[in-house]
Image (tube, rainbow, N blue to C red; front, side, top):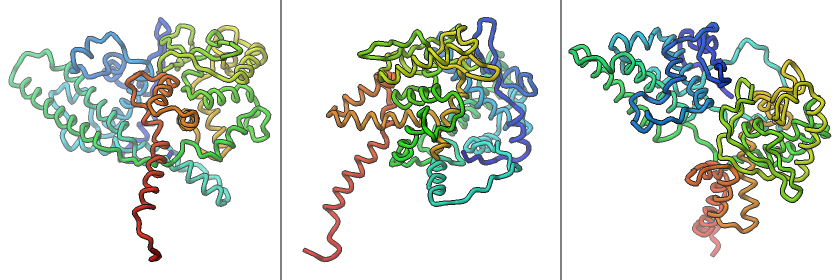
Length: 449
């Protein structure tokens, strides 16, 4: 990923010193806290984060909703608040004191924040020694593909969310400090300034929906075919190209599940032995939704975002999973203390359930071995491309393919995600139609009749 420093002062240094930490309460539930030097950086900010992360002025339906935001939604908000906190700290603006005094951000200050929100943060250490490598044609092609999705600017969604977080946090501070005050001349002035702030930031947020600053090439396959075939070979335990010295069987199974089923990493981490259905004619595993699972002791608990469903797998894959459980897992210390299938096989956490970070490292290392920048969600996109091809070969209609895809992905009936995953196939179809039309309409330039 390419990062860009876009602010003056100590913004980057502050950003690196402020952390998002995860703690567990007395009931074992995880919650994020934005900290600096080991202490909460701002009590108001963390109160907002783990209280009502929606705007306090949101609709009654949202305010009265009993459904709390998920842990991973709050984690996302925590990083947005970290960005916000570090930016205004670098600008010398204490938002809590500012709102408490009855003042709000000026247009110039809001515009400055808006400009900063468009960019990644520079967390790279330029002083590190660079490794010198020879540049061959193959290396250049691989480097182009690996960086094809790297941009100095964030997506429109990330940009929008950063602005939303500022708006909601200022509203939180306003309600906490001023909403129940009696109407005085000063209070009327405060309310007027607040409404001006809200109007300006709301207009800025609305404008971000008009387009994305990043143009994605719809023709770009999630993983090029040659690299995908290399990957299928590399993940095999017996492959001479396998980059791992240990845990080869576990890593092969995890990779195979991601490739064969298209499930998210959270589903793999959440998989328990009791979820396996070893039916010879229809082997599968049950994908469950159990938020705040008391048996999950991980700092970042596994989570499944989609609906609960049964996920079919091949008999060969089920055999490998059973082999792993009966050999590696069974002989590993501490593994008997829980039911999760995939475990850490060495180090201080040996026998404990695998972490998100561990699986991401596995997938990244496999990508490095075949020369691409690989992360688990790319495998989900690739699964959708292959699914589309196979469904068309079987003669299914577009509507039927979409219904099957929604079931396989665990999406709701009104989900629009199918269009996101199907951009590649749509681009190919449009190109085929356009090419055919052009060949019929473009005149023969050689002058032949």
